[in-house]
Amino acid sequence: MEFLLVLFACTVLAVIVARPAILRHLRRRDFERAAASSPRPPLGPEASGDRPVSFRKEGADGDAGPGRVTEGGLVPVENLDRRLPGPDDELIEALEETQRTQDWRPAGQLLALTDDVELRWQRVQSLAGAAAMELARWQAAQGSAGPDEQPPGAPEATGVPGGAPGAPVSDAGWLREWRREQPADAGGAQVYAQFLVWQALSDPGSAGHRIILEEARTVCREAAGLAADDPTPLITELMVARVLGDGRPEFEALWQRVVRLAPDHMGAHLAALPYWSEKWHGSRKEAYAFAESAAAGAAPGSLLPALPLFAVYDHLPEVTFAEGVYRGKVTTDAIEAAHYALLHARPGHPVLPHVHHLLLFFLVRAERYPEAAEQVRAVDGYVGALPWVNSEDPARQYAAYRALAIGGQ
Image (cartoon, rainbow, N blue to C red; front, side):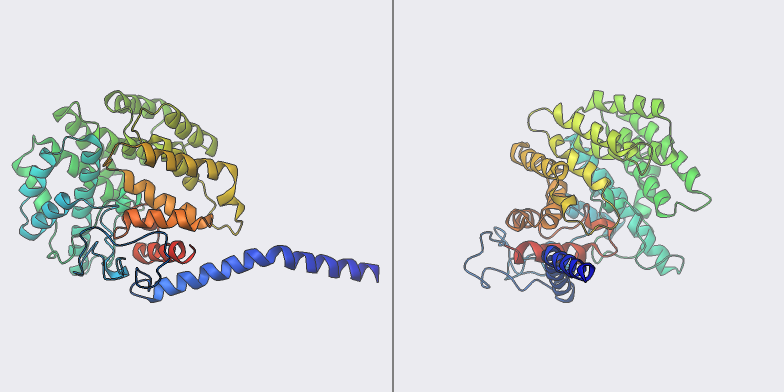
């Protein structure tokens, strides 16, 4: 009898302890279902006069299109732009003109005028990703590839776009012409090297996977010789070195070349971090040490204090039901460091949207909804960043978290 009483008491206690977690899980599921089944969250200025965050973008109009808000102040799911983590009107204009006309010059001219090394790195990846997606769509039209095939890690790891909306189906011939007509142009070489990386990553099991990466490394080195003060091709080579499994001495020597040119380059650190993770050639401890060292030595205005949050994301368990993972000291400290980085980063830093997107993910999981809603305000309209691009449908994954952030305030 005593045993039955003890068992009953334990059961009641378990229910009491587990009930809040169960309710949170059910609430999150309901929000995610609502976001996935609706073209836009039914929330906006007219829905409530009490919202602490306004989602109306300054100067926004009601035109439907990528990155465009609607009368409710939020971008509908179908208009979320998978190509970029945040707005870059100059890039979009040049890219769409290049894809429409198959003339590389608009893209080439834009890149030639891009002096900011962070922005140049991001634009190179964007143009290369656009070419890779354009080729994949052309292959799909020829019946040799899936209709939605996209290089894994293109926008996925770094905000690289796919093809422009409404762009004609072509085989990215503009990139080949760029290389053929201007073989000594550093921008064309950089874009082509990154394009080869996306191509190799799109089919890592293929017989030509390693050959393509070796070619990418050759083009990286050619591009580095064409512009010795530009770290962009070296950053692409960091990706090649990681995937090809270069040893630590070789990788560290390459890394030292990067930091001599751009010690606070956030994109370079994001490219180097996975090498030290337990998924590749290091461990959780080494990845955290790399991120924390970079954050501690960051110059004023740098985004590097946010790097530990990316290290935490890299080592999240595949499946977790434990809320403590997102509220523990390591994660909380990384969140606060990312907040600090956003507050003190130089205005207009090209990598700001990447930090906003990852913060949105962590803040929602930690149920810090008002802060999460602030991240939505900063980046709504764009989903070409971690963590959304690691999902099968980045737009709907982002929309689910957006709904949680807004609905949880």
